[in-house]
Length: 159
Image 1 (cartoon, helix red, strand yellow):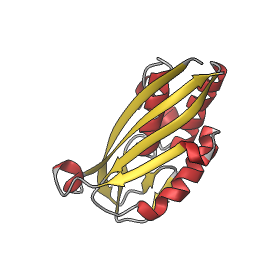
Image 2 (cartoon, one colour):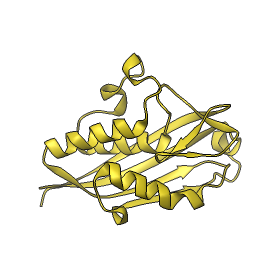
Image 3 (cartoon, one colour):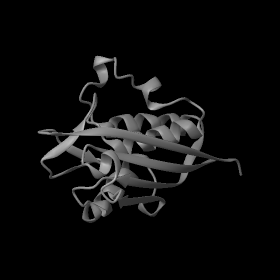
Image 4 (cartoon, rainbow, N blue to C red):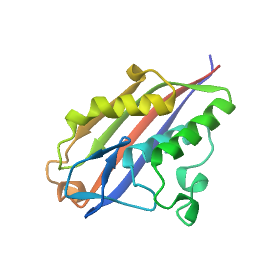
């Protein structure tokens, strides 16, 4: 069996008055992520991981922030397009392991819903999607509540 791994990482600034969208769901908080699209840091990391495993560049190459087409776009749409590329090239997802880093709000109760939403877009079983959340113990930009980061690693296999 031919297998590949890919790694993705993304960061977005937190800003008062913006929506906080992580893992395809909106999380209630007075600050949200700022970006060209809906700024879903987790989905962007997963897109980069999948594109990396396919050796197809990164999210900025496929969905440039200089294009009005992607202004305010739901990142689930971007992820669905990446999954279509994956399937066109005869690859399938083995599993995804990801970590979200932010100080506040606590998001552990939202993780099961994120896994369900993402598994649907990824066209894989929910048990193939792992999401963890952590803080930086009040250190760095995440600890100062200035931003949020996410990383993801994926395993794909040829069919």
